Image (cartoon, rainbow over all chains, first blue to last red; front, side, top):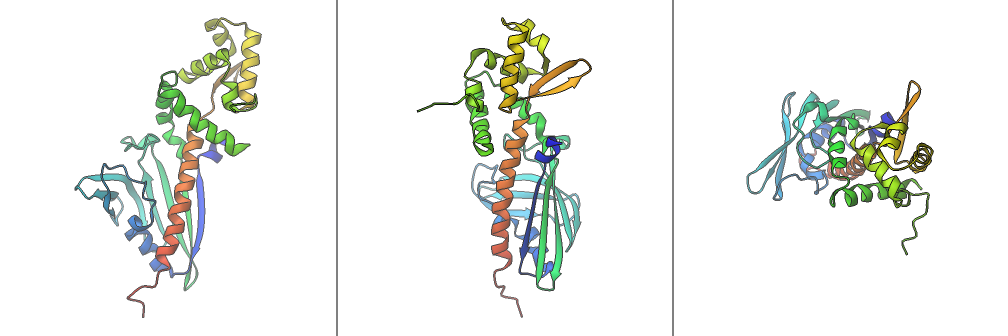
Length: 160
Length: 107
């Protein structure tokens, strides 16, 4: 249904690198390639740490020493697969209820010894839903409408 | 120059009654009868407004027995999905750059 279609993001990219390196760079250097606005901390990020084990976290450490744990490592199978939760709410805050989090699976498939296909699936995005209801609570307030409508306007513009 | 047409979401919400319906549905899903009881408009009028809101994608309906329950389209999820889609596009493009950089330890 449409709900399922909107609740998932799928990406695929082929990189000129062996599968081992593709996996290592993804996990060890996440901070080097994630977009800079991905920062829930009050100051610039000094480093992003990917704890290489199930139950570990992905966290950002800011230059002022503060930390933000925004993902839990759910599967860690080098060099083929990694799964982590996405504990960031639509309000761009840490989501503490695991029920309201989505998850990201990344698979690394060797196409040749020097080429790797990386398949990424960010799924269960609708689990963040309860957060959006909170947004609509303020829908008749001063803050609620512009927020809601600007989002909607963007969506409508895209769809037309 | 703000000539919003009737076919977009903003235009649909320009009407006061439609906005009231939208706000009511933001609180919780409701049937046509409930909306008509709460608002100073007739049931056919409510149905007509809901039709407009549905056409522009603001509202979705669900059939529950003999009733149709209306609720806001979970556009928040769509917006979040779009945001994450952009995020991963950018992240993976940068990732490709990083992973394909020549490495010092390469033999």
